[in-house]
Image (cartoon, rainbow, N blue to C red):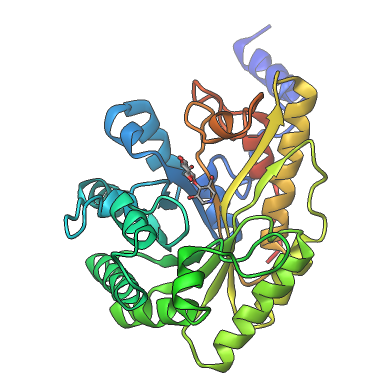
Length: 350
Ligand code: 9MR
C-alpha cells in the first residue's frame, strides 16, 4: 500500500480503536477546585497546623485542591491564649497567610465553645476567683481581640459552637450557667462590631437529623433575628458514620434555616466506618459524601462544604472512636478514595 492509502485506512479505522470519549467533558471536574467552580460553592478542609508546617505533600494537596480552609485547632481559645493575657497567634497567623497566598477563604473556628478552653479560665471559674461579671468581660475581650486581629481575612466565623444539647435544651456550659442565655446574643454582637463584614455562624453536630436540636436551634435563630442580632449562617458539622443511616432529611433541614434568611455551610464533614476498611464500606462512604454535596448544592443558600481533614493520615476519628477510622476522602498516602471521585461526579444543580 502507498503511504497515502495507509494513512487513509488508519483514519477510517480510527473510530473503532479510539477511546469512546475522545474529548473529555469540559465541565467534568478533575479536582476539588473544579467542583467548587462547577457548583459555585467553596470546598474546604480543616487544617492540621503541624502537618501544614512539616509535610510538604500535605501542604501541596491542601493548596491545590481546596478553596476554603478552617483551622482544626489553631484558633481555639486554649491555642491562642494559653495563659491569661499571653496571646500566641503564630499558628493561626501562618494558616491565614498560607490561605491568602493560595487564594483560599478562611472559616474562623471558633470563638465560643465549652471545650478547649484554657486552664486558667476554667479553673478560675471553678474556684470562684473569676466571677460572672469578670467572665463576661473576659469573653467580650476574647471575641473582640480575635475577630479584630483577622478583620477582613475571615469569610465566616463559628461564633458559637455546640450550644444545644441532644435533648434540645441549652448546653449547661460555663457560659450558660454563669452568664445566662443572653451570652449568645452578646457573642454575635461583639463579633459583628469587631468585623462588620464577616459572616457570623451558629455551628453544631447532629443538627443534620436530631429533631430537638433542630427545633431549638431554629428558635434560637428566630429569637436572635427578632432582636436584630447579627447572625448570618448555620453550620452543620456533618460528622457521619456509615454504620448509621444517612440523614435523609438533611436538605429539608437546610431549607428550614435558609427560609429564615441564613446562609448554610457544611462545616466539618467526615464519614467514619468500623475498621477494617473493605471495598463495600468505601463504596457506602463514597455515597454518603456524594449525598452530602448533592444536598448542599440542592439548596441555594448552601455556600460551603468543608471536610474535617482531607486525609486519613490526620483525622480526629481514630482517637475518639475506638475501632473506627478511615473517615476522609484521601487515604494515608494521599491517594484518592472512592469518596473523592464521588464528589467529582455530583451533577450541577444551579
Ligand atoms: O479535630 C479536633 C481534634 O483535633 C481535637 O482534639 C478536638 C478537641 O475537642 O476537637 C476536634 O474538632 C472538633 C471541632 O472543633 C468541633 N466539632 C467537633 C470536632 C471533632 O471533635
